Length: 243
Length: 250
Image 1: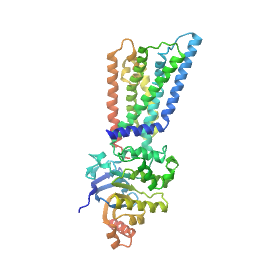
Image 2: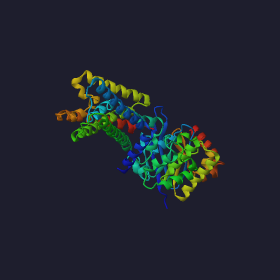
Image 3: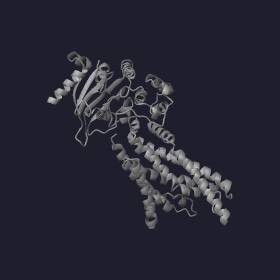
């Protein structure tokens, strides 16, 4: 049976004044995928994610989420999406609980129990009544993940989700992502520079270099031909450099 | 519509929690006390009856409509737009299931609601102080005059907020928005005084349009022309401000 297409990028292009950006990105992500988006600094990972979540406008091309174009039907398209892009932000003058309560007002099915549940899942329940201006980077990241999964989204877009987290936190988050993908068929689109972590978490990998998507393959296929994802990544960078 | 309602509520909560509205409310109370003190001194020392209980709230309105309320609008607009952009928290709204148009309108609506709340609170407090400390001349018509004055003051305040919101989407720093807004306010007020014949063109000249509503011979023509001018400002600056807000990349 064909898997449901969750995210579809077609000819997605955004060019900055310095002529960098992303160019003609074509990509399909399917239900239950944990897609790892790899690329060196400045390759265009965050730009692509900003275009997917409506933070930026594309010069050309389109993003369709569950078949809805974000240009034409933004509210419908983004309804089942949770995300952290660039940095995990929150309102610093509110507590962790209050932040989540505020976000919950955008959705029908998020109540106090769900707020406590996501605070528990991300390990910050005991800090729920503290203003987030006092949070460490790791705690802010955990709150960002709590807010991204708050509304039971079917697609979660995470840009460097493990930034600032301790080892224990990284393992917890990896397990959380795998569990949600398996149990709730949640689809993940994750960018990370922690290549070993991507190898352990993601089942499909895309590599972006200088704004162009140069390869997409399954992790199993990649590891059949390469000793590690790091080797594959370096070979792709070399191959692209020679081209 | 539901997403718009949620967005308005969220904006109100955020603005209320930032405390500026409470500071301005405290300052408004200070204005009421100050105006009452002057009124008592004038009456006691010079024997001039300046304020009666039904005039006092309108005297207070004439002070706050040119000072505290515009200041509150500027501060709330800076918080709602400029600071949210510079602190990277705008993305918390933009990535939720609500369109940018609804976000823009909900911020302005929330500001209008808080200004209304502030005006009504000042009206109630000043009416109370007016009755307590001034010769009582309270009547139903006097109360209606007060109510009308405070309610119609909302229109120029909303128009002013829409104009400032445009500048908040042009400039990136809160200091630039603040000083530009204050400068525009002062220049517009000064031009209104210097060129009194065309003062109706300047938005600041509408801040006291409540006087037209409560004058004995209610000048309908003037009221309509002021209202049309304010509507023109709103349409122009709302469109331009929203265009800038919508096109902005985060």
